[in-house]
Image (cartoon, rainbow, N blue to C red; front, side, top):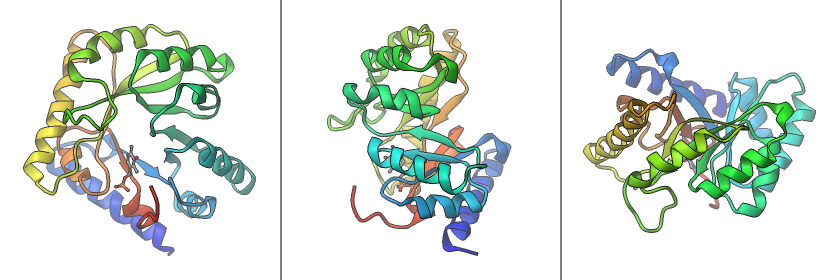
Length: 233
Ligand SMILES: *Cc1c(COP(=O)(O)O)cnc(C)c1O
């Protein structure tokens, strides 16, 4: 078995254990393999091990990988999720080539993605990125502005608002990991209570996925625990 296949198996096991501990079905947590900075060969190994959903941060790199995978694994039905910061001049190719975007943090970007989504592809799945830890340097909506933005985004015709994405401040302190993810969960529950039909809470990475699953993550975004250490970005 390749090391990527072994790592995938290990991460799936971690997810299953964390889910069972939280009395959740392991199948209620989807693993998004974050392949940024790794080549198409690494993605192909993951595909051969059964992984179908991939997260990418850099547009051109992602488009190159999609083309390589379409040639090398034409029968694989892959799902591509854009999870990086979005410049407004990049929305058109993102809308045309991705299945999901997790990193929408302003209405203007959502409106452009909706306008530029080719209608024949069906709605683009969207998560709003929220800045749960309140760090100045991080992108993401402030929690207090998210209800109004979510209501606007939910109305856009070529998008489907699925939920929230959060990247809390990194910490080894497990109690603080739980507190940040619980705050994201609270905001998600409040939006649902307000009438939005959401089903996705995208949170948890290699270092904190167990806490995220315990607090209700439905997608965990895992890179280095699958593909190894990144040498840049
Ligand atoms: C890189 C990245 C990840 C994966 O991080 P790891 O620590 O390698 O698991 C997840 N989410 C986002 C938004 C990222 O940019």
